[in-house]
Figure 1 (spheres, rainbow, N blue to C red):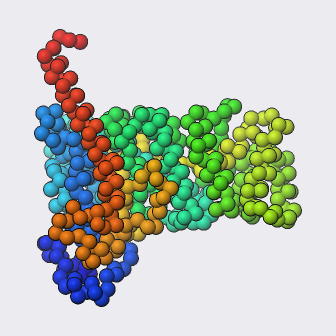
Figure 2: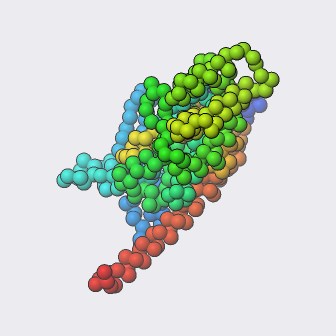
Length: 451
């Protein structure tokens, strides 16, 4: 059975005695187990798909393909006992697969494509020989960065009450990347525990320099200050920037008013609503609201909805002419709901990010893709886990065909989505770009004096 296989793995990954044990018990203990991880890398990890993705069409036979492209990509492995191996590089999918199976990394990170292969970087001499030349534009959003505005969980913990903050983040950032910047090939991935990762893979995104990445990141960044700042969002002017206005009207306002203030009980007790009152820069207004809420008269309707209505009425009434007062409602909504990006992850080409389809060593959950068009249905507590996949393996979900039968497992839906909705359209675009670039190069060679 699987427990025996993990401890005494042989080369063909066979599971001895599975029929007898299957009848007795398929159950595998929940959580992460380094021995079971070996089986996952042997039977489930999609090496071929990862290689095709990271090659961006350069693994073909077209004369315009850069056969060195994949070999110049950096991978890093986090091993047991906090061993960290950077600057790993591989010439093909087989080398990548063999190394992962041999080292069994707890985590795989993906870095930039460099000017020379990272594994042999020390063999090259000269200044600036080893430099990053391409990298996906990436974003990292963690639920723990919302700890000051969520009251159901903290730290790495997450539940159905606060996870919708990640759903909102996906909607806002995905729309901006597509509509405001024209990107098409975007992959969202569950981090395995407390957040989401975004990979923007268009050619023009991969070739952005650090300054351009910083500009896009700052465009998407709204929250200012630190954890000790009373006010995290300060709006200027008489109206929202079109990007913020769209996000506010189409996503954030309805989510905050229709879901979040009640799920987090933001106005149910004094400790919580005082945090909101501190965002209002007028003591007369806060005193008026505080007095109304402390009269101990509990309304029949949801107290959170009622008190939010009080606040909106006072702030947005015609008697307040100062823009900073009238903008407080928007500032409160944005403070609680707007995506909180890890800025440094996005600004620099040499920053690494965890690969999709890793198994999180703390939860045993697989880092599966998320469909941004169906992100409301995504539940981090029901994603495929290491133990569940091994139970399915014990029950015969995978036959000798292996990869072809992955769709019979709980990982199958994620693999199918990755291929059909992300990888295949991306590779089609890459092929067209390679062919077009090569044709232009040939044309220029025929007309050397054509400026």
